[in-house]
Length: 273
Image 1 (cartoon, rainbow, N blue to C red):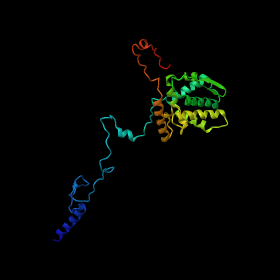
Image 2 (cartoon, helix red, strand yellow; image 1 turned 180 degrees about the vertical axis):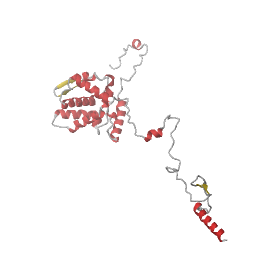
Image 3 (tube, rainbow, N blue to C red; image 1 turned 30 degrees about the vertical axis):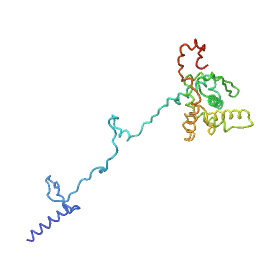
Image 4 (cartoon, rainbow, N blue to C red; image 1 turned 90 degrees about the vertical axis):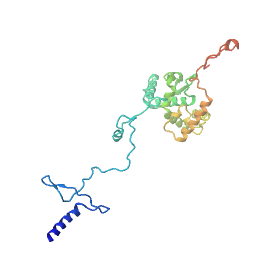
């Protein structure tokens, strides 16, 4: 009787360690452990192998729509991003505008002058654009004088061709900065300074930009460093200008009604006269 109780006690102890009770009091089935000679031992202490990396829970990230992408988007996002840039169609790129401006400097023979003279020429060009606009239908009678050097605006505008607006849009922020310098340098006792500030404020008032006269140029909507309030003022200004000014460049001259010149005695006038 005692030998039977000893064996039962020893096996019972092993059962306790081999199969610990679960929450509901039941004991899971024991798993045999391989012995030294490859055989399975019926009893012994066992452990479950932990899952490598752990197990996630929940639904996980939203999957990529494989109908639209034929590559591993998640892998592409997991590595260092590749830089990209896009040019805007309504303006020249910085490289294109810089090359054209430098060609103007070279043709006029000022590319080897002192930097302050070249900067003065550029600012004169920006200010001329501000007060006269960038319309291709302008007669181009304007001129500007830089340190005694008088330049005809027709000569300069000949470099732009149909890209005149795109050129000035590329320098929109530089033009706004030049206009700020004109306002900051205002001296009522200097006739030249007073005239420039008066011209700038006149254009700004006509465009509804009296609060932001430095944004009175045609290309101000292409500025990228202005505040939201300034941008809203520029957008409102564009509505005023577009509603009151007819862009003859984009107009299509319709056909003259038949008999207009003969019956009524009127002679058709060419568009732009």
